[in-house]
Image: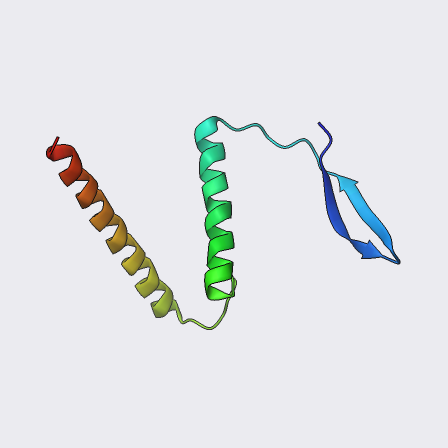
Length: 86
């Protein structure tokens, strides 16, 4: 399968190149990659920037990570309670 990616418009000529055949991943890896890509897009829309931003200190990045992980623990606890109640 030929995959073409648009690179830009140079003097009104659309420039395309053939990408190397993409590696074939199992369904789990492919699903996670898709989720990461979707999450990145949502974050860019929601916050108007990417993780390449430079306006946070190292400690602020640690704080963000802690908060995300705490949310994850809460979600896991909720799922456990759902399973235990069945």
